[in-house]
Length: 155
Image (cartoon, rainbow, N blue to C red; front, top):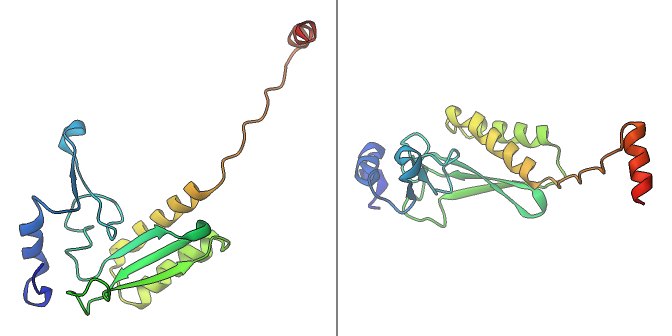
């Protein structure tokens, strides 16, 4: 991309909308378009959610040992990809509400987009739920005298 300071976000979106590195097109399901942008919370190919277009963007990723990482895009250093992201990590042993409150407080205090707060919390919640260990299915109990009697005959 060229110098973002001289080009509006709308112009960048109009140029990059039909084709960009993050775009995923699917012919099934009515020609849906998705995005692989790491700063896209909903994975939808739309102007609202794409992080490479917006000056302030938010992303939520999984961290080591079941933790959550909040990635925010800085408005400075737009042409330096290594310097324009800020990361905050919460460990996996923190409770869910503390992580969600931290995400909301961080984005609010840094004056990030309020329309993305709920999506960021939902993404963090989904990541935490996917990191949980699966419970084993319990062994089925025999119910009724006939079932118990047939089980005793089989053994």
